[in-house]
Image (cartoon, rainbow, N blue to C red; front, side, top):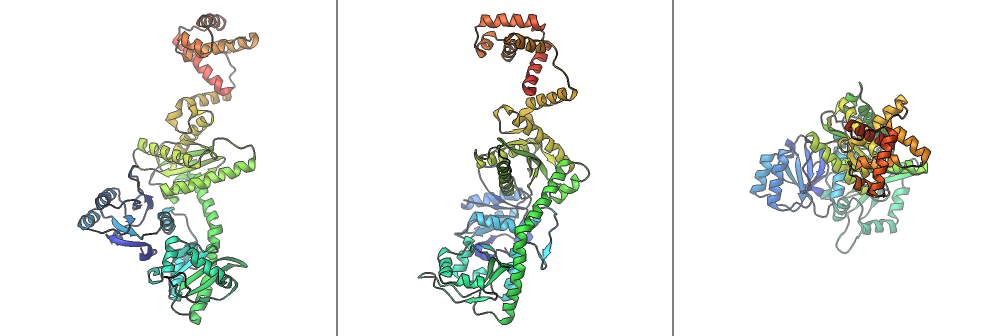
Length: 529
C-alpha cells in the first residue's frame, strides 16, 4: 500500500498493518484447487459479486492468506466487513483500467527479496541493489515531487508514492506502465526527449496540451546515463522549476539510478548463477544440502522436484543450447507465477525445478504433474519437452531423493515411456525396472544365455522368426489366434512354430517360472539392443 499508493490500489476494508507480510502472489481460479503459499496476496480476477467476495474471504482465511484484491469499484457492506474481520484477510480494490498482469509483476518485484529465501543481496547507496521502487521514493523525497523512472522506450520501471496528486497523464502512465502514446508522440515531435537525453542537467518542461480535455502539468526530466549510453530518465511532476539544491540532488540521484539499472542488467545474472549453484547443492544431497535449501527458502516446505529435457535434440549444437535456454527462462517465469519460492537450475543437460506444493504426498505429486503438463502445453510443439516428476518430500537433504525419482522417470520417458511426456516414477515403474536391470547386466558383462539366447542364435543362422513367435505368444497370454494375428500368420503355422521353438530352445512353455524368465529376457533384449 505504501509503495503503490492509492493510484493503483485502495483499501476497502481490513487491517493491512496486522498482516505478517506477503508470502507470494496468486491468481485465483474458481475451477482450480486452492493451494496458497503462506500469507498470500490473492488476485481475484473476475470476482465481483458481494456474496462471492465474502465467501472467498472466509476461504482464504482458512488458508492463511494476507489479502484479497478485486477490481474496483467494490462496496464494503456489513457482510463483507464481517467476513474480512473474521478471516483476518484485508480486501483491496484495483483501480479501473489497471492491468492485472502489470500489477502482479510490480507486486512480485516489491516482495521479491522476502520470497527468494536468504540469498544475500548487496546494496547501492544504502538501498537494495535493483530496488527501483525504493529509489523512486528516495528521489521523490529529495525533489519534493512524485517521480517515475523510465527506460528509453518510455516504459515505467518504477514510481514513487503520491502519484494521485499529479495529473491525468501521469495517472494514465502509471496504470499503463508506459507513457501514453499521444503524450510520447508530443515529446518526440517537440524534440523534448532529445533535449533530455543530450543535457547533463535537469530539463524543465512546460505543461503540454495532450488532447482537448487533458493538460499535463509541468515536468522536470533528468537523463540516466552509464558512460555514453543512455539507460533511461527520471521524470518529476512539479509545480515549478526545481531550486538549485534540488537540481543538484536530482543529478546525483541519476548517477545512483544508473548504478541500480546496470545492476539489474548484470547483477541479476550473478544472482541467477548463485541460485543455480544453491539448487544444484540442494539436489545433490550431502552436508551442504540442508543449508542450501534453507537459503532458497525451501527447507520448511513440502516440495516436488521436476526434471525437464528436450524431447527431440536438434542436430545443431548452437540451436540445442539456445532452445534449452528458452525452456529454462520460460520455466522460471511459469513456476514463479505458481509459487514465489519455486527454484530452477540447469544441471548438465537436464533442467531441474524445485516446486513447493502443499498437501499430502499423492495430492502434491498430482498437482506437480498438472503444472508440468500445463507448462509443456504452453510451450507448444516447437519446444517439446519431457518431464519426470519426483516424489513429494520435505526440503533439506530429502530433495536429493525427489531428484533421483525425477531422474528415473525422465530416463524412462527418454527411452520411450509408453508415449507419455510427463510421468511420475510410479507411472513408468516397469520401464524403470527394466532399464536398471539392463544396467546391471551391462555392468556385470553378462553374456546372453538360456532358451531365448538359443532362439536368437537359431533365427540368425536360419532366417526364421521363432523369437518373434515366442514374444507374441507371451504378450497374448497364450491366446494363439490373437498372437498369430499379431504377427500375420495362420494359427496352424503359429502352433507349428511354437512346438519348434520349444524343441530348439528347451523352453518348457507350461512352466510359469520359465515363461516369466523368457518374457523378462525378451523385454531386456529390447532395451539393450
